[in-house]
Image (tube, rainbow, N blue to C red; front, side, top):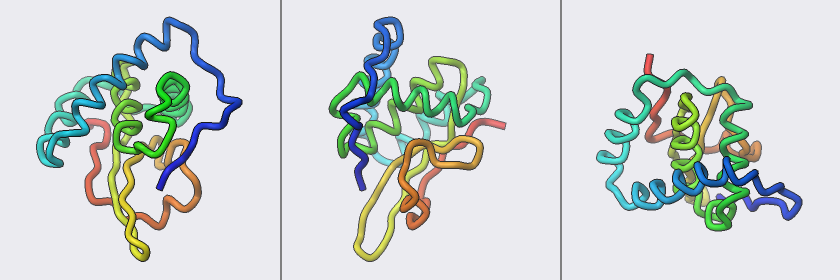
Length: 137
């Protein structure tokens, strides 16, 4: 499942692009880890962060997709990781999720905030969550 950034999406200001580039770079590295190692690292990263509001998570997602053409395309794992990490840089944490659907088989990664998917189409409800890293309690 992919979501392509509309051509009308605004590029964030330089100050926000720098943080988004950093989040995208780290997300690219994390995307190569095993699921167990990845969730362990994300659980450490979320420590001390307040739960992200839907608006905060959406702003982070827009900054990530407005900065990285790679993340604005079909690379949902890197996009979701970069969004969560950018939220963390801003002092908050969304719920990071991965899941699958059948038929046809598809895997997807996304973030949620306030119990709602962030920037995802309505079809996201067809996915069964396999891994989640919610904000720390």
